[in-house]
Amino acid sequence: MNVLENKITFPEWKLMENGISSEQLSIVADFIQSGEKLTYGKNIKKFEKAWSKWQGCKYSVFVNSGSSANLLAVNAIQPYHKKSLWVSQACTWSTTISPIILRGDSLQLCDVNLENFGPDLENLELIFKTQSPQYLFLVHLLGFNCYSNELQELCDRYNVEILEDCCEAHGASYNNKKVGNFGKISTFSFYYGHHMTTIEGGMVCTNDESLYERLLLLRSHGLMRELPSTMQEKYKDLEVDENFTFLLPGFNVRSTEINAVLGLEQLKDLDARIKIRNDNFNQFCDLIDKSKYECSFDMEGISNFCFPILRKDGNMNDIKKILKENNIHVRPIIAGNLYEHPFIKNVNMKRYDKNCSYINDCGLYVGNNHMINSVMVKGLCKMLEGI
Image (cartoon, rainbow, N blue to C red):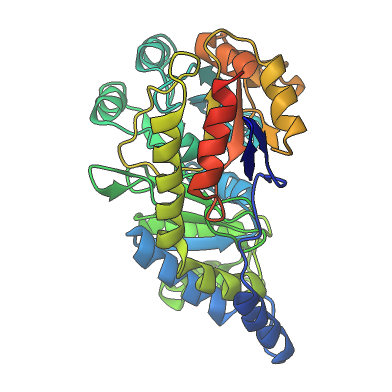
């Protein structure tokens, strides 16, 4: 970046720079050339164990994407023939709620707050009180922690089970406990643009052994042989064939040994990369012009994903134009307002989206990652100040 006579120019500022080092690529290449089995095998189990240790949970199941992780979570939490009502935020990614819709379950979206993009608790209680949902799929958006004691008290009072989508929030925490450990099941994504990558990949985590069993079955066709031998014993009287006994309807969302080998290497760098992201975001919040841009963010336990830019006066046209002219890539804040998207139009629910509409119309984000530095953050804030 150059700053000359108040003119700011950037090299191309991508949403995400390549997070895979040449050393990691060499390790993966050597593994591929080793002639070892490349489909599901020992490295996946090793990666699952390492992730569980880092995350602080009992069980982890590696799958081929964060979206597949959500698919398994929704289908594992209840038998496939039962129908329930779910709640999630109206500002989130489509595949948080798509498995709910595809199951034929009912869905109600709630509005978000502007401090951490979690559920607006007043709106959430209204939904709990008037609609009696069974599940809240809580999404920790943009690396913010969205869990709180107040949220848990609401869920306890109205008998609502929490699941957590942590796909953008690896390492975020509440009271020094990592997100993903508050709900019955949690999900993570290792997509290219996230805190760490397995190119494509995701993880489902739980501390519940019975859910772990269902997750293993759902991941791999519903096959009994995919379970540990100790879990298989209780199904012996149901066995059709030792290789092909299908205990329940399942999918095939397994990942590969290649992705797991990369995941093991990426995990070594994760804490350091989270620190870089958080340092960048803290500087962004210090320097951003608070008279023009929202910045009342709840920073407790953050593991930042990006720089959210929310214009207070609602004028986004100049911002988009100038950022584009300066080679800075932008995206909506997640999906903006899900109520506006075609796939949601046939879902029968009430509309709660005051803040989500504002986010949709007056918000965007710029990427943050381990390659962003202090000079770039200063330049971005200076540019935004002048618009």
